[in-house]
Length: 245
Image (cartoon, rainbow, N blue to C red; front, side, top):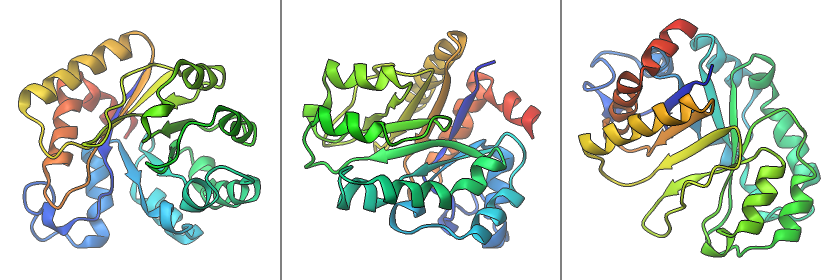
């Protein structure tokens, strides 16, 4: 059965008190509380540094079965090497996050390319050859030249999701290239009507057998987390989250 995963990019925000986190909840209990209400979180921490095994063990220990961590690929791969000669960097990164995989808490791995990086299909093809089969991967392209059928087909061939990202710079259309869909919802505000639309689209994708990951923007306000929770409630995903927990 397909599953809706909804959450935010990050969870460690004291400013979410008291609307999302209880006023007296200590920071070391944020993730545990978060995972009781939402079933996925996007981890941007891994973009700048590799996580320690103890950090990942702590995360896993605070979250129930069925809760997953979508992990942003390290910047050495995407922004320094820009996918070129990145075999070793990729191997090191995947090894670092392996505790999430072995504990069945690993969601998609998100590769966010720099906004100035233009389309290079041969480079993309050669890099995708490096990725081991098994994990789910999503690619967020931020230069419009990547929004091309040649790129979509490359992703389809490998069951890699085109990340549907909303931003002021570029809006990526929902082109389905995998058996799951990955959304990054980056606009500053979403209305109740917007949230209802996300829930309705979620139901449509789930009915077609596709898992959906909805990641609301991380902000110093709790609206993203509350919107994610609302989508789960409207789409029936809250029931799925409760069952897996």
